[in-house]
Each structure stands twice: as C-alpha cells, then as structure tokens.
Amino acid sequence: MESPHTDFIRQRIQSDLAEQRLSQGVITRFPPEPNGYLHIGHAKSICLNFGVAKQFGGKTYLRFDDTNPLKESDEYVDAIKADVKWLGFEWTEVTHASDYFEEIYNYAVELIKADKAFVCSLDAEAMRSTRGSLTEPGQDSPYRGRSVDENLDLFQRMRNGEFAEGEHVLRLKIDMASPNINMRDPVIYRIRHVAHQRTGDAWCIYPMYDFTHCICDALEGISHSLCTLEFEDHRPLYDWVLDNINLNYHPPQIEFSRLGLEYTVMSKRILNRLVDESLVDGWDDPRMPTIAGLRRRGVTPAAIRDFCSRIGVTKQDNTVEMNLLEFCVRKDMEDSAPRGMGVLQPLKVVLTNFTEDQSIELQGPWHAQNESLGQRTLPIGRELYIERADFELEPPKKYKRLSPGEMVRLRYAFIIRCDEVIFDDNGDVAQLNCSYFEDSRSGQDTSGLKPKGVIHWVDAEAGVPVQVRDYQRLFKVPNPGSDTLLADINPDSVVHLNAVVEPAIMQHDSPRFQFERQGYFCKDAVLPDVFNKTVSLREGF
Image (cartoon, rainbow, N blue to C red; front, side, top):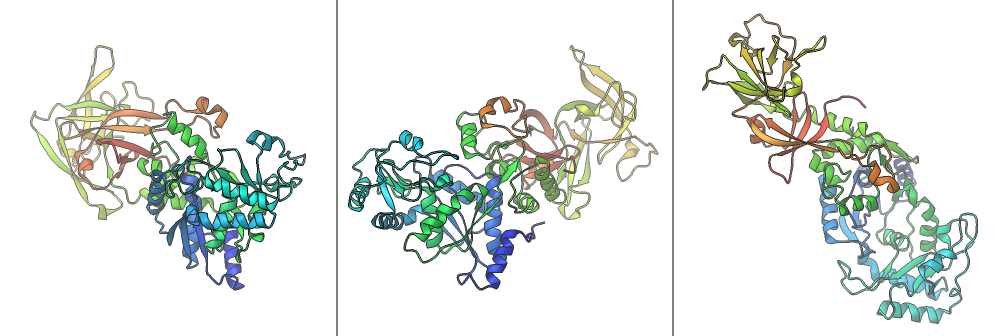
C-alpha cells in the first residue's frame, strides 16, 4: 500500500507543474531540530516530503534546524540520519540552518536599515505583559523608536558578545495590534553564550526559527514548504519576512495535519521528560513512539510507510488508533517472518514412554505458506515444555487443549495424552506426565486418533532459555496529558517472562519471528538472549 494517494498537496504540485511554475522542479525538505530522536509523527512528514519529491522526479534536502545550541547535539543529528535511512529514504544533500548564519544575519541588518527591525531591551516578563491577548492588542515597546543607527550599533555589539543573555533581543516592526499574535513585533534574534555543536563560539546570537526557516527555504529553492498545521498561524510571518528582504524567491508554505496516535505522546518535551526522569529506558525503549524505539521493538520500515500511506494527508487533525499501526505491522510480517515455537510460561511435560536418552529429530517448515523460507529441525526428547495456559485441570466446555486424560497434538510432532498431574508444595501444577503415540507422527499418522487441538512446545534439553519482554501500552488512557503524565503511565507496560525457544530460532539470521500462537517477536538489538514482543496475532483494527 505504498502507492501515493492523490491528496491536496500532490494535486497542488501537479497543478504547479502543469502551469510551468516550477522551473527548478520539485524540491522539498525535511527540517528537524536536532534536540531529540524522531518519532512516528516525524515519519509522516518524512514519507510526505521524500515521497512527493521521488514521485515527481525531484529532490529532498535533509536540513537540520540547529538554531538553539542549548538543546542540540551531534548525537541527535546522527540518530536522525540513521532513522531517515532506515525508513528507506535518501536525501539529496544534508544542510544545516547554521550553514546560513552569515546570510541570515545580513538579512537582519537589511531589515534594521529599512527601519523594519529594532533592538528591544525589555526583559522577557515585560515583553510578555505588553504582547496583548487574543482579544486585546499589544503595546509598542518603549524601544521601538530607536534610530536605525542606534539599532545597527546595538545589534553589532550583541554579535560581538558585549551583552548578557536576555539583555537585548532583535524584533521585527510589524503590528502590535495584529489579530495574529505571531505578527506582534516578533523576536528574531536572541543572545546565547553557548557553544554551538557546529560553529563553536563563532556566534553568541542565534536567529529564531520563524526568521530562519523561511530564509533557508528560499536560499535552497524549496518548491513547496510542507509543514504541520500548528504553523498555519505562522504563515503570515513566513510571507512577511520574505516580502521584506532582498531575496528574489518566495516558496509557498503548505500545511497538513500532524499525526496523533492513541496511548502515546508526540511532544518532544514530554518524550525528553520520559527519558530524563527514567520513566522509560532511553530513547530507543520499545515502548516509545520514537523511530528508534519502534525499530528495536521489531516494527519494520515497510509497516511504518504503509501506516503513513493509510492515514493519508489531510487538513484535519485527528488521533489514529494504535490498532491501525499494529495491523500494518502484522500485514507486513505475516508472509515474511519465519514461524517458530517459543514457550513464554513453561510447564514441564515428561513423556513417560520415551527412554531417558531417546531423542527424535523432526522437521517443520519455517512458514507453511511460504516454502522459500525452508525447513528447520525440531528435536524432541523425553522432557519438553508446553505453555502453562495450554493445560487446565478443570477445562470449560469446548476446551481444545490439554487436560487430565485428554489428548492434544504437539505441533509437527506426536499426539500426547495427559496421564498424571504432579503438584508442588503450594498445590500448583508443577509437571505433567504424559504418554505419546508413536504412530501419530505428523505427516505419517496411522493412529486413527483425533485430538481436539494442536499446541506448541519446545524440547527441554535443546530449548534455549531467553527473556521475553511483553510490551503493553505505555499509557493507560488514549490521550495522556502533560499535566497528568505520571498518573497516566501504565505501571504494567512491560512484563518480563522467562521463556524458552526452539534452538533453530537462535541459529537463524532473521531478527524477527512469529512465535506460533503467540505473536510477532524480535531479537533485541542491544541485550543478548532477549526477545521483544512486537505485536500480538490479533487480527483487524
């Protein structure tokens, strides 16, 4: 399902091409700030920006909006590059807002000379108090009337490092009575005495995003500046800046709805808090909605691209059900993931009519509907494990698994009958003594027996002990709030299980498997002998 929809953005591009308005062709950009790891909301923007450029034979810049050195680092730059590549996209060029710091500064000087920008010396609280509200206009700064020469001098001295942080800012002169608060003399430069990860100590003043972004778009010849709906109110400022500086190109900004996903959060600030307060185990915790977390959980790039394609591109913000993402994950892996057997909560079974040293090698396909995945060997001996949930002392009606005196088939193996139940000192079931029927081997069954069900199992001697991490929703509620974050977190979002898997799984090159009757699981990329549950086998959404 990766064929693009005919959404309003693609229709706009088709129209621009038909009207020959794109002499440079289709050029898009994905402009993350390197202050955290990308999440699945960014994946929607990545798929859109890279997808439309590829569809129309254009190119895409990966541009890092590195204008706030307080929060940015090379770790995040490297992580973002890795995530974009993992999702299956290639950029034309990597650029940084900091590449253009000198040009951006010169445009600010140009605006000062045109008396369209001024150095304001109000502190942050005073500036907030004079900004007005949605129903009341703002008040002009008392410094708005400074002369051009005074503003040029102060701005140069800001750059020279003569002032403390917060002592001055550079603001545009627009309209303090504008109904759009973003147009009320916005700040476009602030002082930060912090080393930048790329430019070092070359700068101590840094441009604001709204001033930087439109200039970078124009300098790079972006044909369509695609951004999420929260920037719709910023578009007049985007346009004002480009209309008032000496730049001969003016890209159109087009907004689309951002992605909301149930039972998680997309705010970088909150995701940072989850990491900083150790509420999760880092940015790549498999419970996180980050690309790194989804990758570690076992979600495939194709499933994420399919998910982004299915939700489409609209102007309406909405929250998508988690079940849709899980559906896309199952759909991608159902035909390609090898299918093996893993027992998550083992119950010991002794086949009493096996001899102590008896062992039989069976064969089973890695996928019954995909022969290209081949076969694997399944050893079975006197002792094995079945799932504790596959045995009931007092089974309900229509029960099709194992119970006292009843029979089941072991997948790819034999029919067994439960002859005796052994209890531990607490009265819990500790072991089942069973007999197997030698003439009931799968594919060669001449026994005439007809058990009601089939269960999975793992040989006790050959099986490999592993830890399985069964992940649930990170939050208990569909729409967690930043003010109720701690109360909304699910304390049981991960369950650690001491499981056992068939040996062939540990020897296979694939990191992803379907554990038959259980779900899809992935070998952890960091921790040895750990499997993360990707998604259950439950169908539909």
